[in-house]
Image (cartoon, rainbow, N blue to C red):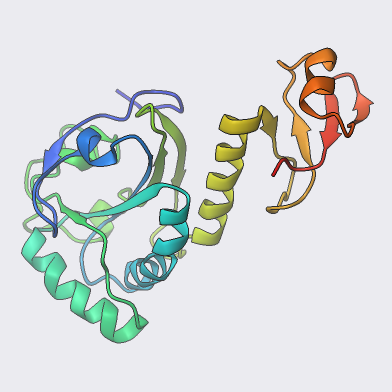
Length: 219
């Protein structure tokens, strides 16, 4: 069954480079990012994992954990991590899920259910669809899904921007407009009445249309 935004993120138990986890328990009461890779020792993914390692303090400051997945065993991940640190200048200090039976890849609809049950003999090309980023909220619901081709490195600055936007919405009943950056003006969500908006934003807001009300980003 396909996954959609606001579906509950499927739970699973899996081996990782930091021990076995129950995914929902591992998430705890914060946010989480699960990002997947078609195979170990792939060039684009090597750069991505290194960059996420550098960004991890930014995610941690937002109460967001990060976890990777690759369709290979955990011991292979450990060897790959050494390459990542050597070439990217950052140690992978977050867990990497081993998925040699393709269980999580199928559970998250990245591979078809009839794709077999072993990573043996598979290439990155046969796992090309295992290139999705999932942002999961404290309620364990999927908030974002973003899939990339193997040849295009993912933009984790954009993923951080989306996380900031969603956390603003969860705290302040605002949405973010096109090309928003942290600190820019935001939009009051339609569910908030004008009277409620006046109470929430005593310094005022700009009504461009009844459904389009702009206000300074809340602190």
